[in-house]
Length: 158
Image (cartoon, rainbow, N blue to C red):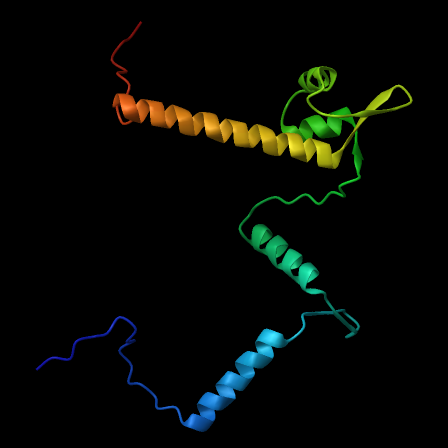
């Protein structure tokens, strides 16, 4: 008779855990769940971090570990048209056109346009959502027509 391996079975014999050990594991788990995150400086000084700061740092480090680039901006930061166009991945001239059309709010500092980072990011979010919707609509239309999976005929040499 052969023993069937269970999905969670590692192939190693199971180790019995006493009720006291189970209680100790549960106590340690509860301590970890309720523990405060702390920042330890090079001098050994510790500072307790609020949960929102800990969550932010956790997400930041995860993004960096995944190889993503990260930019941190204050919402009230004022950007030049060059900085805003770089953030949006467009030419400065195209951005100026969007500003003149009223698509992105701006204010003047002397004779120079300035744009709040929050307004640039809000425009970027709107633009990205609209692009995603257009692409989804295109996929649905092509799927309905039965042409979504069709490969283009590259044999036409001109």
